[in-house]
Image 1 (cartoon, rainbow, N blue to C red):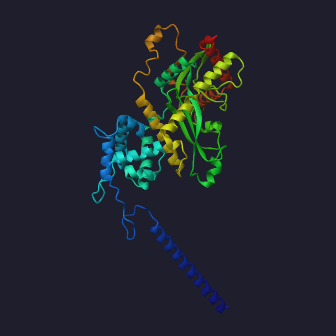
Image 2 (image 1 turned 90 degrees about the vertical axis):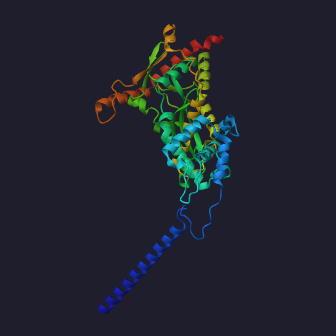
Image 3 (image 1 turned 90 degrees about the horizontal axis):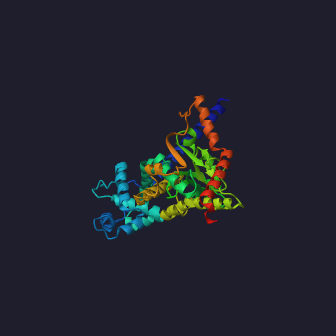
Length: 446
């Protein structure tokens, strides 16, 4: 019996020793594999191909002579065409990014070799956004490797969103609302803030495991952008990231569009249409959106002349957001073609960057006298016809307080929530707008 136990113990020790040896070999193999396929920026090593001489300094000087000297080779119009913006906007972005991220500042390496210019990194990023160019296509003019171009684009998009999202991705303030409502009143839609719709961006490199979730009726993976645009194609609201299998109602259910209004923090609006008071502004939408007090939709199969006239005007002004999508895709071709990124977060930053730059360009190109056609306060006082829409600085809710665990303030929150989703208010507003538009413009042709 003792001999049998000794034999068993010897066999177990041999198995344990063999297992330890096997584990040691596996650990050594994994370490060797990680060392051989580690980061590409691992310095000079024996057997590694030398770096390509890209003549960054001389070609960078040529770029400066093309666009960024006192007397450049190419004019301001050519710069505007190729960079999608004026020199003023470009210089502002360049200065802000250099102060925000030292990556964009020209530096020297350990060997004393001067690195890339700020203009080279920004030009590479803007060319990829504007023309939809691949990372390796920027090597000829910007003299940047593929990995460097991708890194510059990622830092550029994150810097733009961090610096300018609070200014160019905000909801309209009271001054903006007065301008938008004045323009809407002249169009015959008092109280209209803008138009809302969704756009799909195809995702070429969507992971296979996610393809079913992100594929819609076109059987290709897409990501959805919900946007609100005004008459000047300024984008006031952008919600990006929902899978392409969702429709506009699913996107609206997750969208933060009415969060500030429901919480009572949005500016208070009051409009008078057809001798009836309404306390909410609205957006023009297509037929899939719900019958809420904040949406005005067209009339399906109109029969009366006033309904037909109203539907034609609503469908025409609703195209502001469609026109905005077309301008955005024409200005930045990267969102017109299929997205080649692998990470959803990178695609989100690219889309938001394009929207921010779009709004910055609109602000820069807007003429100084663009608001002269709107009546001033003195002219309004002397006018016999008062404004139909009013905006106050205060919040929407009289009992405004951050919605927390206190049940007293929760009642006001639910009252505003129900007011936004009121089908009765939607029907009354649409009937009043039909009568108002017919009295204002519809019977002029009769």
